[in-house]
Amino acid sequence: MRTDLTTSEASVDDAPTRDRVATTILEQGPSTAAALADRLGLTPAAVRRHLDQLVADGLLVARDPRPGAQRGRGRPAKVFAITDAGRDRFDHTYDELAVDALEFLAETAGPDAVKAFARRRLGGLRERYGALVGAAAPQDRAQVLAEALTADGFAASAQAGPSGDQICQHHCPVAHVAEQFPQLCEAETELFAELLGTHVQRLATIAHGDGVCTTHLPLIPTTERATS
Image (tube, rainbow, N blue to C red; front, side, top):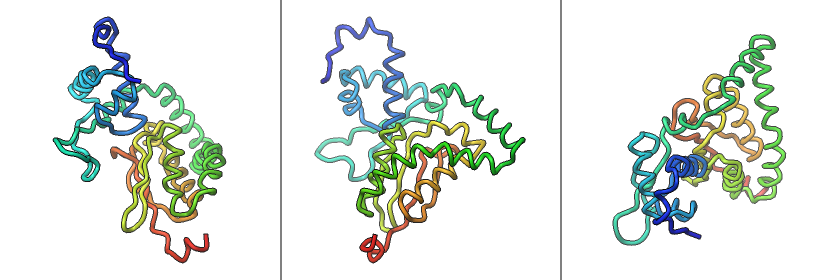
């Protein structure tokens, strides 16, 4: 339920509310002001004020919605997305410790040990996601995986294309560590291939400076779908 904060907003510190707005976009992906207002229980005016400040600070960027995403008459509502500076603003407390630990592991046990660690840390996801994806029809598995990733804060979505599906993740909690240790991204890509039962290709990653992690899933032949 939306709460009218018009008379009380002046008495509330703006910083925590702005952090809530930015965190919501970080975790759930680009959003309009109206959608944020409904999600956070704030007035549209309050949300727009916070969005304007976050854009001015370089933490968010306003852009036009994707073609076909806006329905109805009138000027399409702007969509607000997190910037690289916005991601950096959120303190990853254990990043430095994680990097130090992985550097020590690589030096003492070799790069294969880092890859083994990266695979092992995904064991819990493999078990949970495997049950969900395995129960879905082959053509629905990408969407089911995206929904599971979103529930865990990866802000993922699945899109169908002429050559196959794409899974996009708008948030990566280990991006700063993966920038130095790509084995983390490689292990995740392997996990996706295992869960989906098909070869996948990582096209972009937040760790490499891209705005989103994008994984391409080649189109499954009709005959293969029928036998799956």
